[in-house]
Length: 389
Image 1 (cartoon, rainbow, N blue to C red):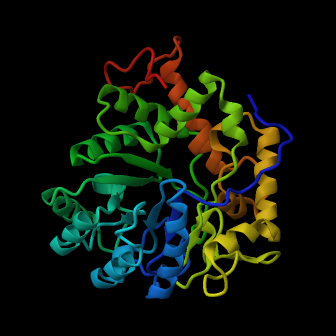
Image 2 (image 1 turned 45 degrees about the vertical axis):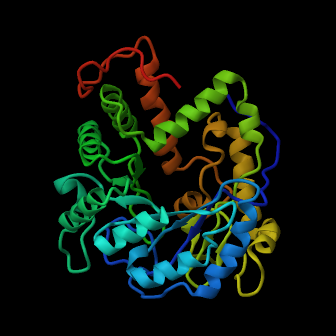
């Protein structure tokens, strides 16, 4: 059912997750990458890191905060510089900020492993699966990156550094789902997140749509047969289902929206939908709320709803709340997907939310319904009622 009809959308004053871009450079040339400046070598300054630290250290007194170092390839900033950026976040603070890094792992050596372990940095490795499934992640010379990523994972394991896997799936078939889950399980990853390839940023090919439910159903079947690797996307769906069954979905739908800001290498603040970083529209100009050189992060976030493009994005969330039965689950989706698919921020259903949210829930429900008929690619033993939320 739809929840909270007619209620406006508002941004929270703080966020449990902050994205930071230590460098624009990436050493790979992924076919589906959406980033506009990944061939440029630009690095975040200590002054920008200080400004972020000042804000999130205050937030950490209110709730846990995690800083995710992300895109281009964070390790391309260099071990010494990355360590210097981490140093700005008051490691002795009574409410320390947690750090995480999203990496392709090709640059990981023993020194990186030692630093990540010493600092307690959470690691997620981008790899799309075995063999040809990872072929869309070549380096800038067109060579496969798979063996180098696997070598980096091997070093993480030898140093006892836990890691998760983030996979981008361009061909979401049931067979690919089973193969991906087995691959991640055999890597001994602590978690799996799945992104279906999207029409976003400089990547202009439309993502998959009609076949996505079959992919998610097969992934659910593989997980049910051997539930050793938590799947981020299923955990999010189960959280919604728990709220729905407990009668608290209206509360979920009505909560203020965590802005999830992204801080670019030069201090620009993208207050919501981090994938808009580096882009502009003809109507609104750059998708930023200002720069940390001019105002503190708290101030920029507080005034963000006054910006026309942020108001339009919040209108999009409100429109989703009014019209979509899935709102309490996805809470309006991401403005970046709306913009890159339609050219506007106030639209509702996108190909991305259809394939990655609506079809995901359909795939899960196939395993929960008593009348579920086994899919030809369901692993043995996965027929019948599925995982309980």
